[in-house]
Amino acid sequence: MASFWGCPRRFGAAVCAALALLLAVDGPLRPAEASGPVMRWERGTCSRPLYFGITPDWPPYQYVSPSGSPLGDDVALIRETAKALGCPLVVEITSWSRLLSGLLSGKIDVIGGASWTKERARNHHYSSPYRQETLGLFVRSADVGKLTLTGLSSFIGTPLRLGVVADTYIGGEYEKLVDDPAFKKVVVEDPRQDQFALVATKRIDAFLTDSGSGLYSIYRNGLDDTVTLYPGYLLDNGPVYYMFGKASVDASVIPPFNKALEDVLARRSAAGTQQ
Image (cartoon, rainbow, N blue to C red; front, side):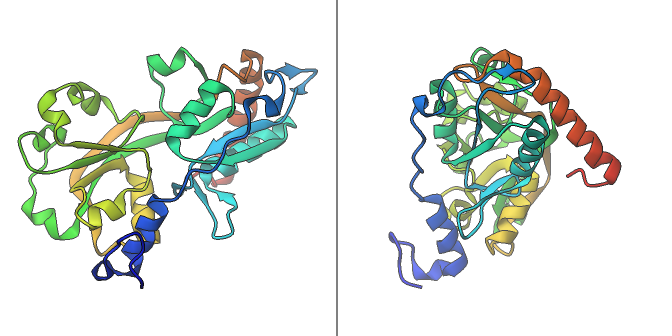
């Protein structure tokens, strides 16, 4: 494999391919005025299509096929919910940071996989919860026996670098430490959801992220022999929600959306297909 943007040959095709995905350029968002007025629930239906934003690098929840089609559990669930509502759905693909700014500006109506925070609730509506999130630490397989990590505070005062996704809620333990200057020194924030290649290439030493997505990603990217979930550390990060921007979605949409979402989840559970 040729050296692409300086990816050394010794890292191998799988690692370089994963790093190439990390450096992908953000896709353009539609103009805020493209959807017309604020979306409302009128006469038993949506007043216009619902614009749903996803990242391309957060499998199995949100990702894109080789042909560029949006896929993932969050995508499938909202498609089923929107269909039950009779609301057309348009999927936009870009980075997590641009999704958040798009919600505030009205370029995006809703995103998935969002944790509830008091600060976010000022500018966003939340759906009913639809999935529990568990965080894990992903490290190089060769380092597992050398590390003694009992929590995030174990990184303080060490040369280790802890990677996190910028502008995300990463659990109570992280929130308690994030303002500690000694902890800030070891944290490396990055807007990309998939940072496993950065672990493999020693740009960071650990990556704190959703454990289910992490296990799926390292296998999908051929990194499961290089990167692994650190044993003995899992953090319950609570439920996740679909998050709607108040700039483009009226509160009247949320009750019927929640009813449809809960009906879909109940049908899936009864059928044994809940993921």
